[in-house]
Image (cartoon, rainbow, N blue to C red; front, side, top):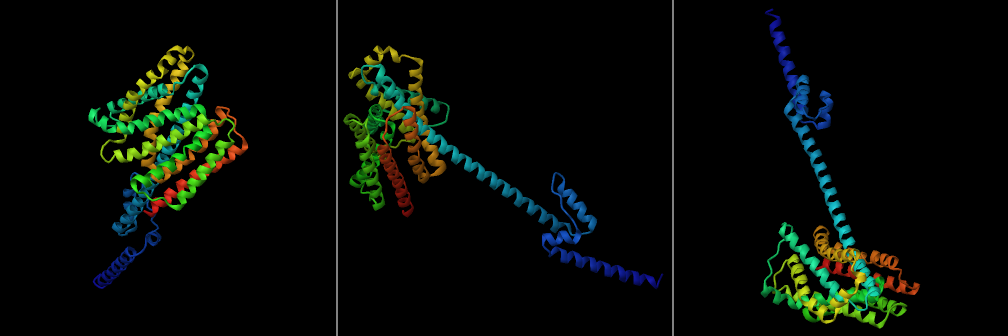
Length: 393
């Protein structure tokens, strides 16, 4: 015993040094190499940390480094899953905002065209002003309901603010009225194409009143849009001088509204939905007396053929769509940005043109379709030019 004890002690000391060396070398290895040394396959689950610790203790390994490796791997996995989930959520919100804006934009034009076409055959006079008044009332009711439930917020009606905003609203009323009149006397494709002309007038106004420069690519786009629209009007068998007058008036009033609002917003501070509220309240105040003066109210009261539930639903739907279009526009800009919003605005004209042609059974010659397509391509080029110009800035 006295002879063997030193030998046994030396053997134990050597074993301890050998085992310590294994642990030291294992702590310096990579996760894959570590797994090979002890043949340990960590299982991370509900009690994964306990199973891992027991397995490592069984093999006599340094558990601290192995646990850190497993936890780090698990955190990276969860982080990747969270990033993937966030990306999918962002993509779905972007797509939904574009689809909602497209639907509201197309529905607004088609609904107003249906209204303008339906009463034209059932009444002996025009009711364009009265229709705009009805839609404005619906919009005011909707925005007030949203304010009451806390969805939007804007200051209550103030007469001083209304006076400051009144010049803007005059252009707003003219824009709505002439838009309804142009739909009454023209086909949907023609109205859609001519709306691009307002971009030309707005850009010229920016140059004259605000000193904004116009790039050459924008000028080329304007030439294509204007040439295509004029050629389409000449070849359109249903186009009349009255229809052209209302389309030009709509372009002028739309550009006037945009330009004067750009000036007014520097002095009158209103939120987006404050503008919606004041626009529609003042629109009702300005246009209802005009509807009385031009006999549109008496025409409506005497035309019993349009006193139907279907006609009431159409008018209410037009007001709702116009109101939701404001929401959809703001949501699309916030989710996608101005660049994508401009592209979507140009693309919207394609379904509007073809759906309007199919629904209302309008007569359009192949030559007219060709020029309409050319004008729409000019609209796309204009959007591209504005995008490139914003990137340079």
